[in-house]
Length: 316
Image (tube, rainbow, N blue to C red; front, side, top):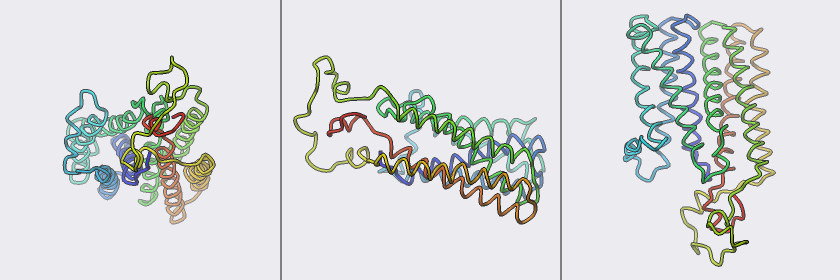
């Protein structure tokens, strides 16, 4: 698949935003983060900015962005519709929680913890729906995996933890639980991603021309002519290829920036204070986000749609 930068920005930015919202909405009512109005503005504001940036960028690859709202109409059968509805509904408790925190010093939101609970549940459901959009597509073998959605959830948690850790350090705090969460969530996310990569590399079943045409019982199927004689949308968007050698190199780059560097920096940061702690938290954040961005590019670039079988591909 063609790795559209708008979708890469959407999945990285919105994922981190929902991860940050999830953690703040859980931690603030329990007093696990600074409870000042300034921290409320910074944390909730940053989460909403990341989410909004991601959601808006997701419309850039559409031919008619003004009609994006229609994607919500098929909620009974479409994970895309469910994601859109969940994303919009999550704004309500998130904004109410931010307002009650900033203006009234209430980190529970309106009611006995209802808004904070609705906020983190909404964030969790939205990211789950995002993962299911890809995991539910049998036409793309690489995405149609039980590990696709867990990867999305764990990356949202890990990047959200990186943002939260940087915010806490920026406000003069040093929460050990957040350092530990960063380390554990990064390890979990990349461990599951490693299993995902091994799964798509060693799969024993592939889609072939025979299975795509339903003529497997007749033996080997050969295409006489391609469906089109010139470049078209399907070939541009679904015929993107990345060499196996380049994919392996990019995987190493993704793991270096997304896992190893943030782990090392965060481990050192546990012993640092003041300006050095803030600097290390920012370095870990930048490295982690860069690694996830490379991983997301690969997620799309390595995917092969079965339609390519009609354009000469032997397997997908």
